[in-house]
Length: 235
Image (cartoon, rainbow, N blue to C red; front, top):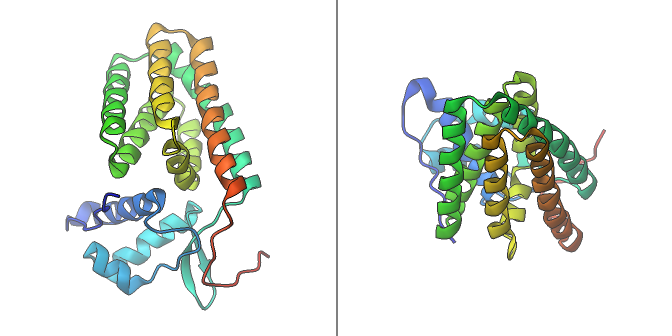
């Protein structure tokens, strides 16, 4: 398994965003697992930044639902139930279907070029089998899809959903046989968008999420919930 690099370059203007991205990727890749405590001192050592930057990043990830702050225990990686996951995938299917339709109707040249590049990059990362590249390139494909749809509210909502379900996205992609289908599905989406076939683009976007959901929910059905090192009662 590849080792995910967490060290952050010290550029003041983007430092907080870099820390957020590194921690978000670590959660998405499973390096930080659901229920795991995130200790500030250890995160400082891993990233090479100070506590202020770590705390700012943790606050953002908590707002996204990736982290839960537990009284007297501190931040832990959030868990997600099967019911929550099913609801998230249902909403993603609807919104990404809309995004695909809107993109196919809008079809700005620069967005089409960016989508073609994103599909190529994802296919290459799938062939290489590097987990950090898989996450990065698939995220870029979604980012292009959302920019291309031209609806800032759909983009904001789906970005939040993608962040919340990031661990399950990696889980579904890496199940046996799923990755090659995922590559084929996003290629088909890109072709439908480029052709201006709004109906087909919407259908394919929804189907892509539905197929990913089947795999992820099946995994949740067969895997025991992670053992958290804290006790937390939902209020």
